[in-house]
Structure formats: structure tokens, C-alpha cells
Image 1 (spheres, one colour):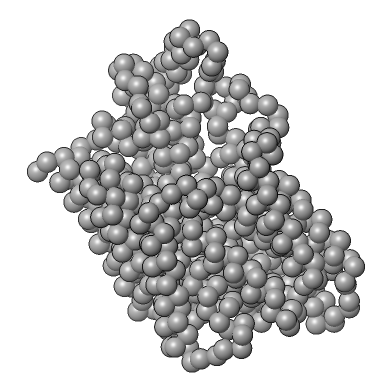
Image 2: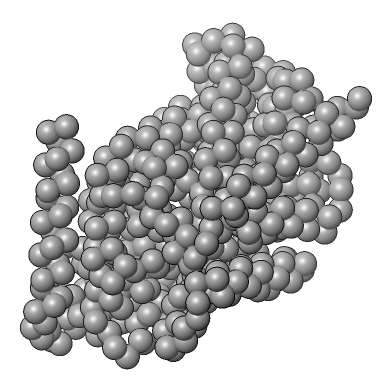
Amino acid sequence: MSDTAFQMLAIGLYFVLMLAIGFYAFRRTSDLDDYMLGGRQLTPTVAALSAGASDMSGWLLLGVPGAIYASGLIESWIVIGLVIGAWLNWKFVAPRLRAYTEIANNSITVPSFFENRLRDKSHVLRISAGTIILVFFTFYVSSGMVAGGVFFESSFGSSYLTGMLLVAGVTLCYTLFGGFLGASLTDVAQALLMFAALVTIPVVTIIATGGPGEVVALVQAADAAHNTADPGDELHRTSLFFGGSVLAIISAAAWGLGYFGQPHIIVRFMAMRSSADAKAGRRIGISWMILTSLGAIITGLAGLAYFFREGVTLDNPETVFLELAQVMFHPFVAGIVLAAVLAAIMSTVSSQLIVCSSALVEDIYRAFGKEANPTRLVTYGRLGVLTVAVVAGLLALTPDGTVLDLVGFAWAGFGAAFGPLIILSLFWRKLTSAGAIGGMIAGAVVVGIWGQTEALSSAMYEIVPGFLACLVVAVVVSLMTAREDDEIQREFTEMAERAEQTQEAVASA
């Protein structure tokens, strides 16, 4: 068999595994709560690994190693910020959100939680939030499909269209039929595959290069050679601080703020069996995240050392992970590593498809008072997944800068529009629906304007001003429109007491 045949065999087996998991989940899905939230029965392991895999897209395996290869450890501040943000999210948001979404009329989506928590009878908040999710995530899903097409085109020489349709088709199948549970269980398999690849590649590369000391020496030698050839572009890739101002480091680390408002991540908190599972979920999820992030960073440095020693310069630094897989392993094993890249892409796409479907059915269709029996609602959920996938696929047929540029600030958009509202909903009694609507609009608008203004976006990542704008507007407007509501106060007290009792029970266990 040729090298390509071995690799395609590995990827084919991966596709079969994903479809089998989707079929298993299909047989366990009977109503909309199952389809959108897995019946709130996710174990800590599934919730944690699913959240990690749906968050860490292909950038963890391609973008991070490539950035480290090209610029050094200064690029790892984004990863550091993300790890801190994820830990804070699991620690403070997860247990309260799990309890509160159940208390607030069993809310199964983020927009429905806002409406139920704040008693917004106008449905404006819920429909607006659902629409923002639908629009941003449709483009986000499209970008994932584009990444799949480019992956097959660059790795196997196939046409872009063939690769895009293959990735989109397999992801659509297991998501369409398996729903949230299917997406979550496939995420677990994909997270384990990503973990194995990001541990194995750097370890094998370090050994092949001569050990950690030799890697550091070769990276420093590569920097010296570069600085001699181009003194105007000095590099010190083993330094966490060289080449970045304090403002730039803060801006990079501020990516962590985005976690509080990402619907496809925080919905995993809502789907856990109970608030008590948050502690175990945090330990598993953050451990996975730290180890895979370290693996990605070390892959960039070890790859630089190895290829410098071999006299090879990569035209595209983002291929360092793929190039090392081809050099270090048998073609079949290299195919499994390539499948890990697909896993990173597909896990994110599937999670976003489910959130888009929930926005269509739960947050827009049902917000208008439309009801149906459980079986029909599940059918509508599947039609929602199909509709979003088709629209995203049509956008992906002719990828251009506008689609990919939108994805660049989608993380900031969700983080700024929803993040402060999630925090205020869980920790501040006086938040009102008017405050939430004002804050959500302010955050989204500031991110949009700041992100599209070169002078501003180059100085500070747009999530920082957007997050602050949402927070300030939400608080000010809430104070201006606050009215006593005994039911809201009762539910907030019940949530706080349940979260405290859970924390005490977990601590004493």
C-alpha cells in the first residue's frame, strides 16, 4: 500500500467510528430535551472533554504550533489566557448555571435562560440572542467546512470541494441523528485523539532531536542565525516576553474573557447531571487543556529545532505539526494524527450545529408560542441542523475573506455580548431584561466597530472594550429599570442556596 492509502485508511476508520457513535446516540434520543441537552445526563468526563474539544478547533494543532515556530513563546499568552478563563468558567459559572437553568423553568438554551431568569415576557431578549447565535455560528460552521476542504486539498491533493463535502457530510450525519448526545460523545473520542497526538508528536520529536537540552540549544541557534541574517527582525523564541509590550500581552491573554459567553461551551455545564459534577469536570477539563496546550507549544519549538538541524525551512509554519507526523511515524499512524486535525475541526462544527438548531427551534420558533409534540420538536431540531448545514455549505463553496474575517471576531462577539450577562445573571440579583438587552447590544456593537477599525484592533483585542461596554451598560440600565419581583428573588435565593449546599457537600466528600 502507498503512504496515501495507509493515511486514507486511518481517516476512513475514524469516520466510521464517528458515524457509529452518532447511531448509538440516535437510539437514546426521544424528545427535544434529549436532542438539545442530552437529557441533562452528561458525566463530568463527557462534559469536560466535550467542552474542550468543541472549544479547541484546528488552531490548537495547526495555529498554535505554527505561531510558536514562527515567533516563539510570546505567542503562548493567548493559550495562557484561555486556560485561566476556562478554569474560572468551570469554577464559578458551571455549578451555578447548572442549578439556575433547571430552576428557571428548565431552560435548555442560553437565550431561554435569559428570558426565564429575567421574566422577559416580550421575548425580545430571547429572540435577539437566538438570532445573534444563529448568524454568527452559521458563518462559524462555514469556516469549519472551509478548513476541512483545505485540509484534504493540502494533505492528499484532492479537490477542495470533495474534501469540504466529505467533512461536512460525515459531521452532518452524526449530528443530525445523534443530536447533542451524539456531538458530545464524538467530542470525547475526538478529544482523546487530539490528546494522544499532542502528547506523542512533541515527545517523539524531542527524542529524535537529541533531548530537551538539544532542542533549546537548536532553537537559540536558529534565532542567532535569523538575527544575523535579518537584524531588523530580531527573535528570541525561548522568551515569554521578548517582542511584546505589556498592552499586547494583556490583549492576548484577554482571549480568556470569551469563555463566559460561548454558547457551545457553557451549554455543556447545563447538560451535566448536577452542580456537584462541576468540580470533577473542572479537574478533568483543565488537565486536558493544559496538557494539550503544552503539547502544541512544545511541538512548535521542537519542530523548529528538528527542521533547523536538518536544514529545512517550512514555507508555512502552520504545517509543522503535519510535517512532523509525516517524518516521525509510519503512514498509518501519520493518518491517525491527520485524523486528529479533522477531529478538532469536526468537534467544533458539530457543537455549533446543535446550538444553531436550538436557536431556531427553542429560541425563535417556540418563542412565538409555537408548540408541538416531543417527536415533532425533535424532527424540527434535525431540520434546523440540516438547514444551517446547507446554508453554511453554500457559503463554503466560495470561501472569501468576508466569511473568514467574521470568524476572527466571533469569539469576541459572543464573549462580549453574552459573557457579562451570564456572570451578572448568576451573581447579581438586580439585573433586568432591559439591562440585558442594552448590554448585549452594546457589547456586540463595540466589538463590531472596534474589530473593523485597524488602529483600534491593532492596539487592543476588541473583546476587552466590548466586554466592559456590555458590563457597564447592563448595570446602569438595570439600576434605572429595577423593580421588585418576588419570584425572581425566590429563584435567585434557591439557586444560591443549592450551589452553596453542593459546594459544601463536595468539600466534605
